[in-house]
Length: 182
Image 1: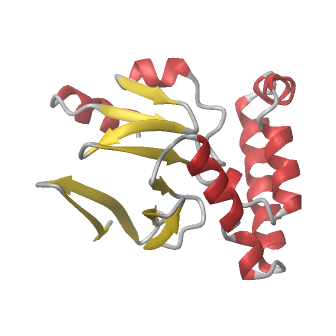
Image 2: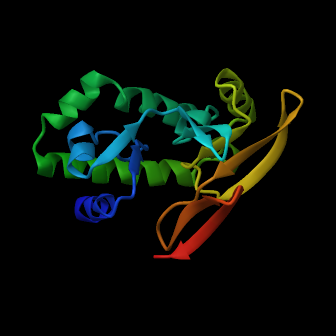
């Protein structure tokens, strides 16, 4: 992954990185190694002349109390320092254990709990003065039009990268959500 990202950066393409729920330990050294700019979660960018909120999306799933507790723990500097003090083999074993526990827990949760909480979407978009939000995490790729503060708004959800990859093609004043085979 590092080699591919560095090769992409070396073509002149600007590469940006935002932590997700499985790569939250990736730090500035990785970003420097691949010539990427790390983005805060959330962050506002200008996309086609409109302020657009970018987020990983996991913080929007407030109905999943169990996950929100894990998220708070995993994002704490103390927990991260404890994990990073372990050997690579211990960290890999922990990651495998956490993924298995997550899969098991998710199989027993209602679908709506694992999706975003609409009131949280509205709150964060209003807080950041944005009518467009782009996020991942829920892995339900779609474009959702709605009304926010009496104006048209949109939430764009990127899909996961297992059998397909997802990209937003943003040019000629148009945004197109595209899937491609990996």
